[in-house]
Image (cartoon, rainbow, N blue to C red; front, side):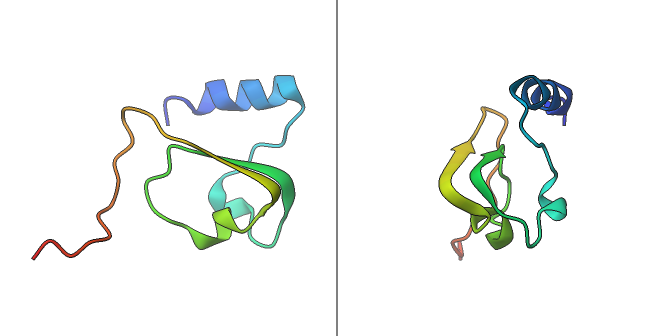
Length: 69
């Protein structure tokens, strides 16, 4: 969340659209950048037509998909 203003500014400078994941249902784009993904959201991954870029940071926390028992 603290990076959101910087990301929106960068997208504006580059003339890119910037949307929250819940705003892209049914939309498609030639390039999709997913930033600091916490959970797998199938919809976000299927929006990219040509390029899918996933950016993680030191603060990215992953939800375990493996049963630890």
